Amino acid sequence: MDVSYINPFIEAVDTVFTTMLDVKPQRNGLKVSDGQAKGPLVTSLVGLSGQVSGVVALRFPPQTALQLASRMLGTPMTAVNDEVTDAVAELANMVAGSAKAKFNHDPPLELGLPTVVDGTGYRLRYPTKSVWLEVPFTSNAGNFTMEVTYNPN
Amino acid sequence: MKALVVDDSLTIRRIVIKALGMVGVQEATEAGDGAEAVKAMQAGGIDLILLDWNMPKMSGIDALRAIRQAGHKTPVIMVTTEAEKSRVIEAIKSGANDYLIKPFSPDQLAAKVKGILGAAAPAS
Image (cartoon, rainbow over all chains, first blue to last red; front, side, top):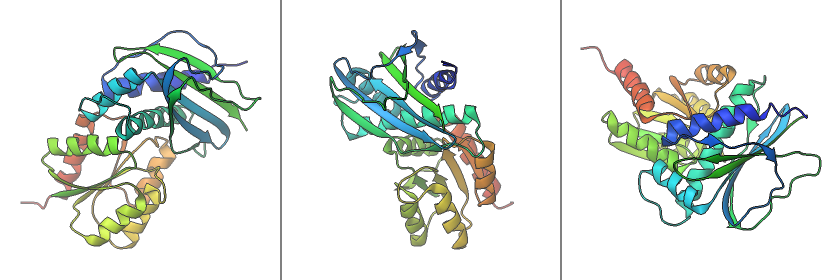
């Protein structure tokens, strides 16, 4: 399996977090995801469509989501509320958009609107034929993971 | 000087409004989608538009076309994740005056706004 499609997404995480948050994420490996949340997680998902079908999901422990939202909004956030989910939704949107530009399809891929899931111990169920890659990150704002599926149509 | 800040993300609207303050634009109206933006333009009094592309109900590019078709010449800066060259060309052809790709720093946005306002200022 060619997993090189993950690289533009990893570069996009670096660009978005550095530019918008002054946070330098460090990548820690790569594995196939089973979609299972370990404990409470705020998950932000954005779909890509066109010549490929894809989804990028950013999965944050609540403390990381609060740290990131506080930086984006410029005010301390203490609970996962609509403002925090809006902030993490926009992060996923920018990561997806930045990655799709690097693929440079003609016509450009279409971005869906972000969706945020907030809960504990839930599992994202992926269609059986899709393979999801998981990239864990550490950062000075906390740990998080990115999960991506990207399939040519 | 009054700006119309159009983005479905409250977070981005806040970041944009803060950056506008850096260049002396202290008054801003917000819109969460293209349809709201078109409505805000009908109400009048807008000197500058910061416009996202991907939004529910009406996209930014459709709103831009509607605003230009209605005869408004207000400067428009697209502020969007749509970074492909063909998208930039499409926006400029549709009447955008400048284009800023997300992610952006407040300084980058401030520079774009300064450039637009400088170009729009009457010669002394």
